[in-house]
Length: 72
Image (tube, rainbow, N blue to C red; front, side, top):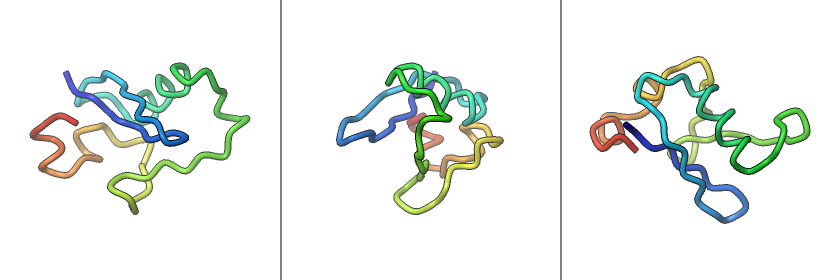
């Protein structure tokens, strides 16, 4: 099990996931948790402060080695 952490409006939102989950699925769970619909939001998903998240990549493909190892 892994954990994706989103910073949204100054709050950390933690989403449980598997390292083989695609980022688009993790983002959908995030949107459900914050009770928002994607089409109504203009969000930019960044990883590590500067890299845009690629929604078709798996968690394990998006994360760097350190984050893959700690599964976060």
